[in-house]
Length: 92
Image 1: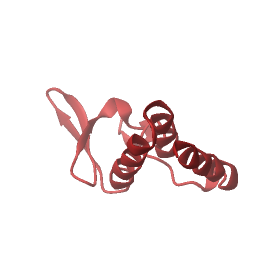
Image 2: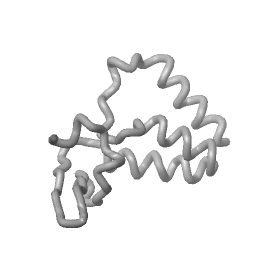
Image 3: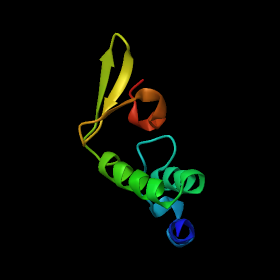
Image 4: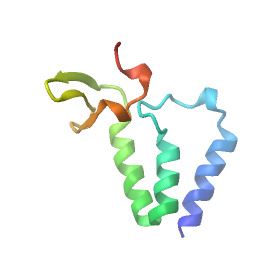
């Protein structure tokens, strides 16, 4: 069953040119992340990763500077370390 999700992602990559895709706010694009998780851990984990990334990867994030480092507050209310975010998202 995980092959179906992998085929769908590869189909998405082949049909939608990279220039037409919405720019992901993460370093590893959402589709690449879901593809990797599905390959490594199976269909259930891949679908769970897809749902989580769908909720997180959208406008409405804020960069927080704290004594522990920089974090990004995502639209769904979760926080991630700045290292996993694309460089274009973080101010210099």
